[in-house]
Image (cartoon, rainbow, N blue to C red; front, side, top):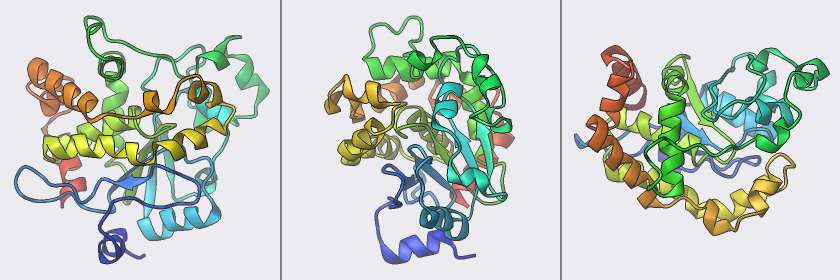
Length: 285
């Protein structure tokens, strides 16, 4: 199998992986670390929704990147509404679901069920489709900007799933991709924590988060074309969807103030030394 890291570093310097069916897929490799090193290519990718991958995209991810793990941060409702993506048909790829938003109604292993199963849908509350992307705010953080409140909310209300997603990044023998719908908010927080464990500089973590702004117009247009996300995309302007460096910078500041940093938050929530070592090795060695 071709090494994704060798392929990318020999042909380009940016970290974007240009696929037909995604807009916001990039590698967490190539970022500077506090000890003067860099994170490795071909270990962990971050992405927007994978539902519209082309056959060529699937070949790239499986045969060239060596993808074996998909960590899906969407809600059950999102997965049910979007349906099966093409990677679901690949036996070598394991899908894991860890929602970072409050679930309404059904809590199940949605990957073990057929999304078009009417019995599954019947278990959801009548208004489930209107609550696909609920906003989430941590108590005591009302004075923070909206994005910061939401991100701290993930860490307050969904800490177990944040930790589970990070553990899943090291579960398989090959590369992993972590994604949500846009690949910027939920994915951004999990990616930031993974990079912190790997020793990436705070500036690199912030820059990686903000990089989605480069493609935000195309990303909003893609999501607006899906009935699942159209209303959320069109009721606000593009600027309101655009990630800003100061949002992630503020999250890191809050983690420093309350927990001694992102790694401190992880340690105090049960993500121990052995797990940190495994995640660091995945992104560094």
